[in-house]
Amino acid sequence: MKIIKMIRDAALVRNINGLMYMISFGLLFLGLASCENKDDENSGGKSYLSIRMTDAPAMYDAVLIDLEAVEITGNSGGTVLLNTNAGIYNLLDFSNGLDTLIATGDLDAGTVSQIRLILGPDNSVVVDNVVYPLSTPSAQQSGLKLQVHRTFEPGVSYMLLLDFDANQSVILKGNGEYQLKPVIRVIDAAITGSIKGSIAPLGVMSVITAVSGGIIYTSVNNTFGQFLLPGLPAGVYEVTVYPEIPYADFTISNVTVATGVSTDLGLIVL
Image (tube, rainbow, N blue to C red):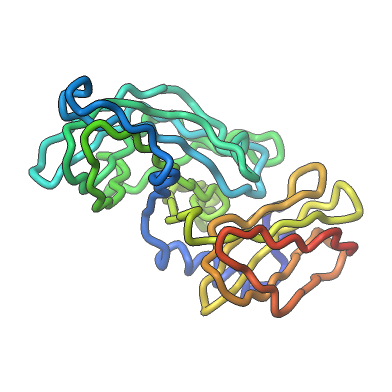
């Protein structure tokens, strides 16, 4: 199958599948220092929240997620249903730095403990122009619960970005069915960097990994050959390109990532 051929190193497949169980759900808090401050009296002690969604690219034609609602839970257990832009989203439309607004709302100032994404039944993946339904584990059918412990101040606007990793969230089971086991990881732009570059020849699709401290981050180049690995903690990485056959794997060692900097690997010719 095309997807399996794209990742030819068996050890990489095991590591990527294993990472499904290592990475917890997470959230990105952006622009808190530059949040819009509102007059406390006019805001009535409320905080304003907007939630956006982005994606790490994947080796599929499309990954379609049926988003029905977004709910916020405070430490007291009270819940607030946000104004959600419900609908079916193709996650692959929001990769390599693109994102989309999925929910907004006013919250009582205080501490938020959890965000719950409520998905509908119409989730699917498109592989080689064939649509396959995405089943959801029973433990997640009540919603994807993302743990948060953040205090919102009155009269301040906040923005959260959810990084939905489509490449690791879709699992091909032994019976040929596909399952959705969402991986949503933590990225904080204020304390992380990124790696970017491009692949040649044009049109060669590749899985790109960055490994540091035993943690693997993955991406896929777009049709223009460009790729982006965002949200990387500062450190030294080994970057490997796993292209389609007959091209050989390509590894770059000692790639340094600094906080707030996008390390550009330039053009990688296979």
